[in-house]
Image (cartoon, rainbow, N blue to C red; front, side):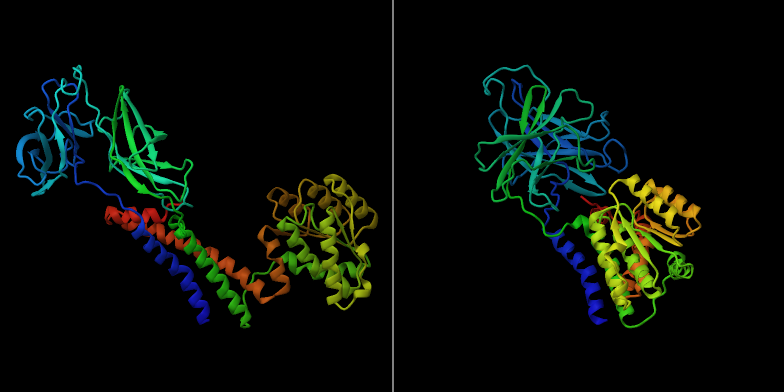
Length: 525
């Protein structure tokens, strides 16, 4: 028992430990708090200026937080000091836009600057990352005088990491969308993804992605690169935004290699539920081996087997056994032959004639061995003959017609139909009923069950057919397995119900991070 409990704990606890270790190794989502500031020299501006763009924070436009304004600071050195150069009020008339924008026209042409923005949230000043150096260039300095046009900002914060929970066949890219990537924009043409084995290039185009966000809250887009992936090579990536003839390139991310994971964290719950099921089966097998009685409800069709064979013996007539029309690769056929073993043992003990017509050659060979073994176990090998089991035809209705002819001529007292049946079930069952034979049927074919129920005395429905071997033999391993599957299945559904009730009940009070982690556990990829 101690070894059994240790096995159950190992099955249930180990996946949790593996998942916790795996969670620490998967790259997290890094964000430059809180605005994702991007700064570029304004294209086409002959006077020379610098344009800043940043994503709005919660409370801007909707008034959900007591916010007032953004402050923009500038310095000629990365370490400061920073001087406030402008303020941007909240609640500007652009609620449909994701970003705010400011053009610094006070920047000196040719001078490099560093920028950052800040805002006071709940009494605390939250500042962005420092961005720079950026040099203000006039259109003449850049080589051409351009008509001033809307600025295309590049995607930012590009990350590349090995795709979790795969076989090492892909690398996932994640980036903050370009501020120009807004809904219903006819000018934005999506993103091109480039890859290289060297940071200096050359970079080759490997795919593209449409505009829009994969994660609305974080304003990020994801792309999985699985094209001609070499697991031994490290790759570098960059993403290029396309807008109205312009392109803007992100930072280069890498190096990163694709690698397979030993454990799929998205299937952790499935493994735990499987552990519950397997543990329950092993527990009941252990109880059965220890001699404890396991309650299995009575199955009327199997209880009547002795009576049906006894009636044939009293009448001096044959017993017909039909093992279905499918081959040995069908589990219903195997279950039917298990019941045949019990029937053959009874006919051997009662010295009753048995006939087993089959429609598949492999079934014939297997059925002969089953019947022969049953006669040997009953101590009556002299009554056995290979002619008891014989082949008729593979044709579905030819097989049914052959059996019906023998039934009408020989008028057996008992007929068993155990296995997989199709349309022939109606012909067989009605013919046997017409001669007054006791008929016991069993199949897992839903469409044929009504015919058997209407025309037969007893019918094994669905899993009753598969449970017959354990029910008839009373062998501890089979009984424990049968009982364990029955109780284990109920425990699995009960566990799922409790988990989902807990999620629904406490999900509203949990932190978003905890909800996201729980969601990742229940997500199967």
